[in-house]
Image (cartoon, rainbow, N blue to C red; front, side):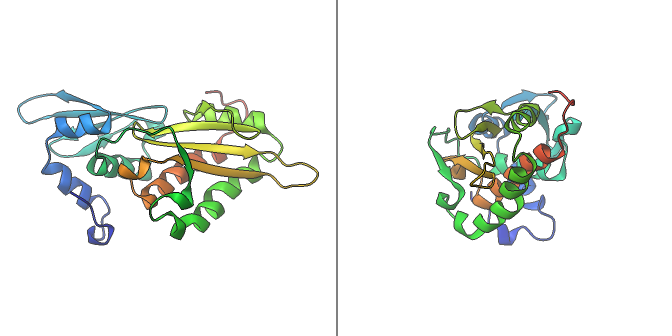
Length: 211
């Protein structure tokens, strides 16, 4: 069942909650790469990996229990959207630019302005600091650019942040790449929201905070 963004109404949680109410939570967990922990009759939790930790989605009332670092409005909403959208397609291992995702061209300028450019500005001459911030947010080192890390936003929705540091000829640049199959689990708008959430963590990070 597809979710039409225009049908959500004023509360963005309404549609995914309604979809999950009508779904088999064990099947949902299996598709999403999480696990189902049954409780009492008709009750239980979907436990889902999210970035550096896990969240628990309580059934049947469909509420999200998350540690403080994963408890933002955006991540809670994305968790429910991911559970309701994921068709079980696993990552392909092929990285693509945001504009190559279905529906990505429309939001590409927003990704550059609100995600890539601010991170490039903060870490323009500090690739080591960029890596430390990525590790603290749950990133795993990659081999692209001058510094890069991939993030498992959810098990089937992956992205990579790549930094090219500033030099005498060129300003610093950051590009976010996405696993090509991520749009089978979240749409382009949702993935932009996920990239913004990671960027926010990188921008707030300060040296000495540790991982």
